[in-house]
Image (cartoon, rainbow, N blue to C red):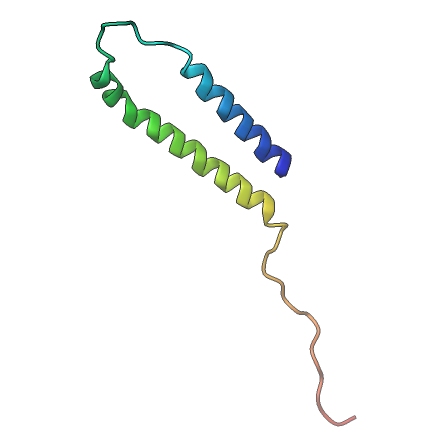
Length: 79
């Protein structure tokens, strides 16, 4: 699980650097309105991926810990 988490962290760091590689042209607007309009869908995607990863992590770490029932009991009475 530790190596899986490390791989996801490394991939996220590489991905954010790849998107940040573009530079803004000098003297032109930064396109804030366009970024604000695209932001909600990106936020939903990132949130969905995060929740999916959390679900997978919880499922993988549960170790099959279901409900355990006892089939043995004590018998009382006279022989």
